[in-house]
Image 1: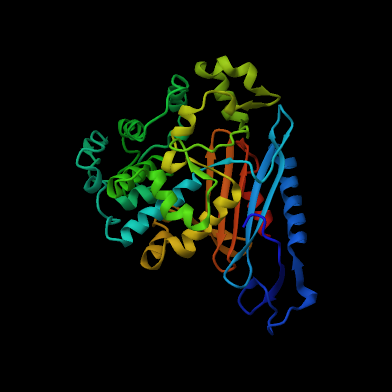
Image 2: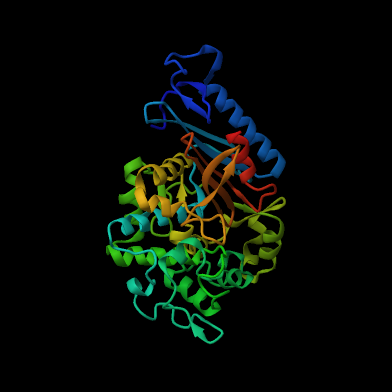
Length: 403
């Protein structure tokens, strides 16, 4: 699949939308509208190069899925820039980048499959599956909400949990144990002790903890490790053999360095646990966060942010979530935002280039990513750059590609 010969496309303008297909409006190719994949590739390469120049990001990997008109897709795999600045190592499509919170959409997809099978109910408390007291001490204004948080709330970020990725104290904690993995229960305990940021179910606040909880629910209900469940239910069906859920399974090729800059770099420079690595990790204006021990960093996200993969696998997985993995009533639940945001059950519902899109961004130390699916055109984009923070953000690259 990764070496599939590119096909010729025809742009067909209908009364309602612009589509890519393998035939013209009368069933015959219209040579005046032919767009070959080589041209598209060149345009995407230009968009990536402009993005790297504008943002200063070292490198990026991109996968683009286009419809072939027969229900199949054609894949473009493109990488530009550097995967390692110090070694002047060129990025390639075979590189494994980290895709962070795009994992959340996958985890939600599995939960919704289990809902369809009658093993989970969206509006049941998490305690139904993890047992009473799973988040004992999750107290706000004298009320313990631990046994009241629901499955729906952990998927749409109305559970009240704090986001550890935005918390300086969490980075300080991680710096004291860089060689030691975080367990999912430790992440839940951290959030429980922080307490609800608001009464669960009354506001939206993005966080990773809820999808870590979802991973624990998946394991409890299926009796299998979450990585295995994701692989058998989603990855295998789209030949995503180069996708891995850290820390259970790590990508075999770990040659891509991830860099931080700006406020995050300044913060890391001040944290004592990172300072012993400062000399070897500093590369110009960047701090190579992958130069420090990785167990704590790679384990915190798990089913909320642990995916490491080649970009084309991410694109196929992401597309499958809306075309085959989740169907019927559960698909409608998946893409219906809560009253508090434009976020459904693990996916953002929005618009790009005049089209409705389902998307999710990802950010872990050293990497910034996004996946986008355009349901009306059956186009999928997956990107990851080896820098965080990025200004302008990664969404500007997917905007350019979709345009």
